[in-house]
Length: 88
Length: 179
Image 1 (spheres, chains in turn red, green):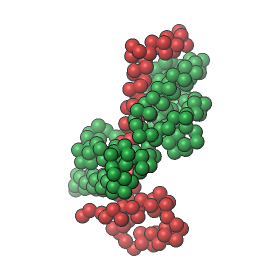
Image 2: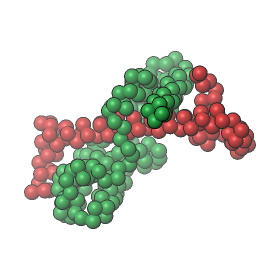
Image 3: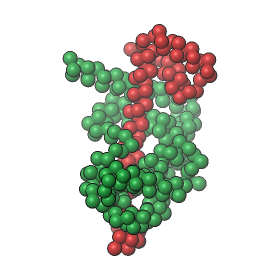
Image 4: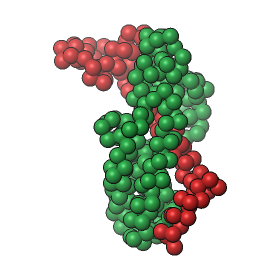
């Protein structure tokens, strides 16, 4: 069954601390007695991790592509000469 | 100052990374060379440092474009790797360097493929724009062609739900596998 957007938003706000102390305490109290909510929170935490890992992989690939272009590409010969002088 | 959370986030980011290479890498290369390191090792460390720098930069907009800070991270990563191995980095093979503790566990291409087929590339782009690159919903609405923040937010939660479903399915598969 799909989780409602309202519930997703509530969990997100709790996890990111965008709630008042009172709301946070109320949410914690609900967590203690609502196993479904506890499970939803755990899944949402994992979902954020999946998103971050995906994004990080994208950025790593972007950096690797720039590295390749600068060290192997024909348009950055001045940079390559500069670095070669350091290691020669 | 470069605004990395601009509409053309990817392009801005790539340009910023290139500037970092041109302005910081030569100094770091000299640092590595003075310590007996090789170019390959300097490139490996720089790539890792640039990722760390970007993530901290996104979290703290105040240090955007601070090349001294990037240079500091490079030196820190370099020292950490040397301390970790107890030997000069130049003596390590590139696969050994890659094996030292990185900032995270890299998802396999199989996992990424499964994720993309379930969630879709556009959804992942939207989610990463918000949860990783720290763009505002207003910027996202503009970049993705939504009529406003509200419809972008609705879409964000739809996409998040898809990732949640993916996570749950993965769990089920794993449990089934154990059974």
